[in-house]
Length: 329
Image 1 (spheres, rainbow, N blue to C red):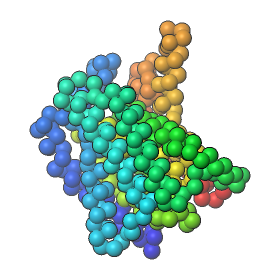
Image 2: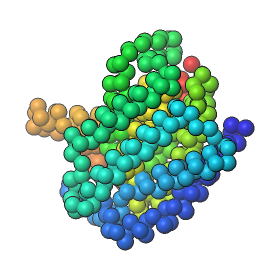
Image 3: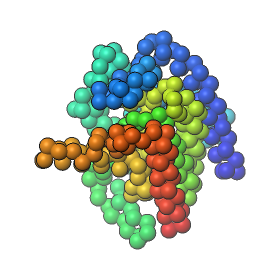
């Protein structure tokens, strides 16, 4: 029955995403919601100059409409833990939307400042922690393989903030090539969907698992428009929402550390930026030709599609290892 429901929500998300995308893309083009290109990649990415951004609206709307339909037809229940996931999904989409909107309005790459983003994320994390405790979840660091449970009390709120900030920015940094972040997100949410179905002790685990498969379907529908050559980019609207939601599901499933495997590419991309930045500050030299990592391969002459396929494969291998750990160990 669960597999049947998972297949149903996957198909609903996929079809709705295709339909919504066919309407949203012309509207964004008409509004000239164009992606602002990195000045160091203008030559290589010149063909992308008039591609609209804010495409995350497509899979976000698809997912929300699907949830409403499923709820009205009594296919899912609304639990506190499920509310947390939806709250983060929408809240971070709002932050990303504001950032994208300001960039388009100002006609440059200056959206929300880092401070403004952090203030928003702190407020959201506090609300997350409140809902988390209200749902009778304990503030535990839980390492399943060695049966270790460490109650860290109010420090868990800081842990939540760190996961949300790190995961949202990691996906945001990875969203630099056609279909790259979308494909990796499909793999990641599909993986956590399977892991969630193995978490019978968590209230609302079925609904969260179904949401993972729903979002996987919505993202696959979006990938039809986002794969090379992309007709639309997800923008911060999509990337921040996806990253934070992935982190939220990892927290609720008590498999936060599996993000290291499931999100291995996201982590490598983020590390490449941090290493490049601090190494340059210390030595005035660069380790990578350009960061994030996917741009390093571009500068070395790799074809964009080959880079995306390689990174997808690495993400898939990491997720397969994570599945073994998350389900069998």
